[in-house]
Length: 624
Image (cartoon, rainbow, N blue to C red):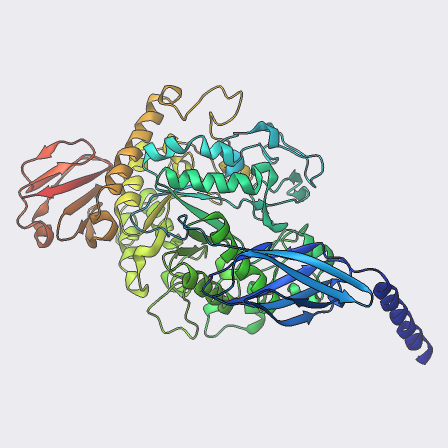
């Protein structure tokens, strides 16, 4: 047994000597730059290149100090802890690395912070529009594909390939979005996804969705690259719209450059054999749960081609947090939607959220935690429940209200069903510290499309949009909902991610224009437009209180009100007209004698009985 061990030891020494004999190189530094004047003076640089970890580092720059250089398992990495004093000036910091007779100098830029808008946040005053840039509009056909990328394909005839949409395409339609009443744009991730095609369900699929990052500091070239993103954010801001960045902390793409030469084994969650997450959220909050179940949920991989990052590793945590800060400062984004929020290490998420909020106090963060009850949903946001762990996330995607609104439109009215589902979800808002910071929605890129779920019923469509744009929270709408795009996820997600008609060369119809839409589509578009613009100009729907009354006989009534205005939303989910006796709502209606129907501009001079046509939601601005 001694000889093999000795042989292996000698072999290891020989390999190390050969590695040390090679000249060191520095090929990457992340972050790619930083700024003077940030509130947190600490910065950790990731240095990568052959034998970069064998160098002895130093720097000489006024106000910048190298506190410590860390070596790790892989000699190709070094992690440098810097402090940047408030007195430091913008310029090039020259980082010197020495080893024997070799000396390397690596420039690192410290920039001055500009005063352009950034981190403005989104609030209940906003109306978010969610779009997949690859499927929205193609503004530059020259960047559709690149032969040197792992996936060189672009083919609109194939639902699983990239279709060529890009940031320039979104810019070209900012006027359309502004006219619709949109005040914030959320794009699915724009970071580089230099991923190979993956075989899913027997079909080869591209990473057009954007959720498999391969370089955190590069915007995907097929979307236009870093300069195009800077241009998009600036023009969105100039048009009065904010930008929501879609963040992914839980995992990276299998082709991420770091994965090709890991700094250390613990960079990822490693298992003896491949272990997928169970996708079960209950073990995280279950006071009776087994630790193995909790670990599988959190540390199991989302899918085989999206390796799971170990955020309890301090180097990983610093890498992700600094990238988040860099993104806001570099591009000027305003809010942060966090993918697969519940699968992340929650103490890490608190640390990341705190870093963003310290630097940008107005920024809003809302994560995706796909659960079906208010207790588990509250766990991932600031809440009033005595959980052992306290989340500091300001908001979240409101999956509970999403499901309840769809149930209210699909189910027949009964003791617990139909519109009672919507009422009951809101009745539990006491679990949240601020339910108005939750982002509400009727569908998104991971769900069946709203119109299909409700049976292609335009009356129900209008009811749901009315609720979305008048109840509490920050409303978000999926691209194409305003022109009645529909479909189910079966046989694949691509069915609910079809191209926006008119966004691509050769489209037979251009639904960005009224002339390209059918009368039914224009009716839907104008309905959304009317409500969204009313919401935008009505602070009562942003910050006013919400009072709801028990649903009765398929009707549901609630009020948004403040010292300046009272808005009544009255819904009839029945198949026949109802004359609504309003005496039950005297608590909110006393003193008002008339109302304006904000959708028709008609005036109601008698509020004692309000006629509610079948399957209708009225929005009435009460007047004295």
